[in-house]
Length: 74
Image (cartoon, rainbow, N blue to C red; front, side, top):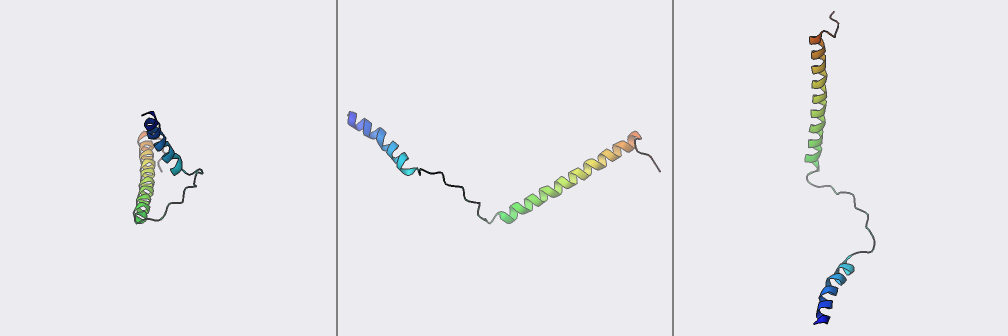
């Protein structure tokens, strides 16, 4: 009975040790997928949205400055 308990405990340990490689493999660079065009379009859309948001913020600041009378009128 004791031999069986030791065998049950040793078997998973042996499998884990046998399946693991002793070295850490360097990760491979990601390969191209069918989703690459979609993800690049999504990134371009994010960049455009960021540009629009920055422009909107600048316009809001300019409008607020004009309402306060900070800007000189011609």
